[in-house]
Length: 279
Image 1 (tube, rainbow, N blue to C red):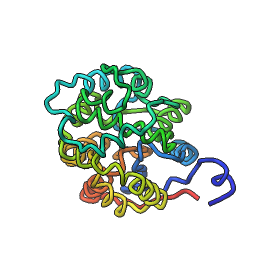
Image 2: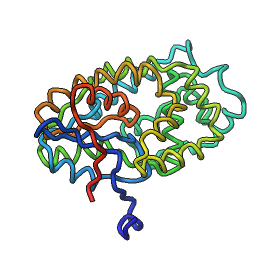
Image 3: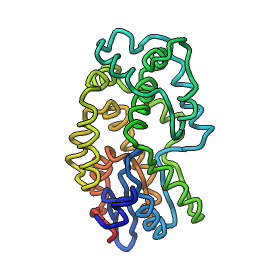
């Protein structure tokens, strides 16, 4: 770690691969959508080298509002009621119900609520289970200082450099995928809230090292490591990026858990893919 990295929360991006076929060179980055460190300088150096930047889905306020609106329409079936133990609920309520640095739909999360009880659990129990989970995870991340947003940083850098920006999915497709997260996965992870600190620390360690297989193997505990988010979307994301990879000079950013599946499809289509770290 250099002096700048020590004093600033900036790190070198290691979860990135050069994608090559003939003379057509592109890059594939596995993002940690939220993280306690910034990779903005690394992202800037890669974005300088390409013409097109691909992101999973739109990040503007209007589209985020659609996610919030859909996720807040909890009808009670299914819900978190009767699937969490008392200790889990108590741990959830220990999270500070304060937003210090709103992100994506964070402004909404600081103001929503249908209960006079200010405890976090009472405020989220009526939401769709995936939205309730992301609310709880949001407050946990805030408390731990996970305030850097790789996708949003990449978008802003690309906009500033006037690069072509494309999205691999629309927000309706992303909402459909969220609706497919099984309740038992959400409840299972929430009921392990007492182990979240260890989970988060190891996740950060593996990501910073660029240890892809270790991280993906470990991330299997997370609720979104499921068919609707990973298995069904890997081919969709890959098909969306293929025309741009065929032209080259493209940077595609997808969640790190998509890398394994997309890498297999790239190799099948004759690409070479090599982990690439700019010094």
